[in-house]
Amino acid sequence: MSTKKITNFSLLFCLIWYTISTNYIIERLIRMPETTRVRKSKEERIAIIDKKIETHKANIEMLEAKKTIIMYPKARRKKATLKSIVAIAKEQGWTEEDIAKKLGITFE
Image 1 (cartoon, rainbow, N blue to C red):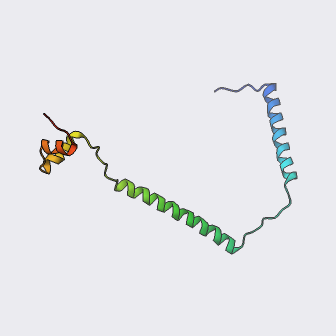
Image 2: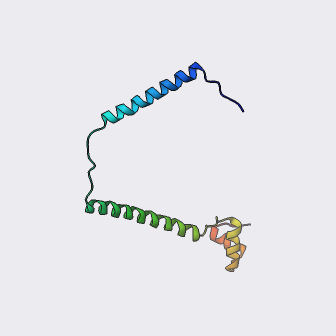
Image 3: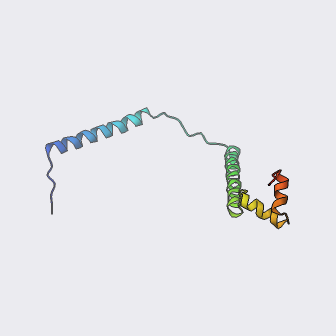
């Protein structure tokens, strides 16, 4: 078992801390205003709740929109490359000469 040695410094520190904390509490109690709680009417409380409901509905709609974007993302567009353009043209029945004519290129 270890026992802590209590020094004069630790006793002094505890006494100062106790004095400061009790004085702070007493000052707070003395300075407290003598006001009573103002109760809100039933209509005011209902209006506050309705406002919160509308805010949460808007948040829910926003989250559902994000959910649909995640579930059904837009198809990514492929970049047009020369190889893909030539492949599509050949699928449509064009030859290399037809493509060159459309582009205005002549080979000798």
